[in-house]
Length: 60
Image (cartoon, rainbow, N blue to C red):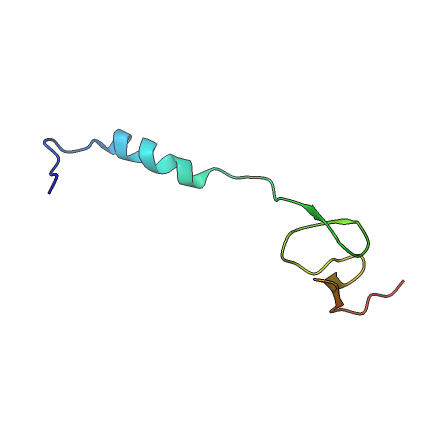
């Protein structure tokens, strides 16, 4: 089993862990029913459809 020869410094450890905390802008996809942009795997806020089924009644 591999064992480190020397102790990893706090700076080296923090540099390795810093990649996890980067923020990203949310991804968007087009709704298959109305074509509006929405976040994936969510009900479309403009028409109320998810996977070609009406989930929420939206007032026009």
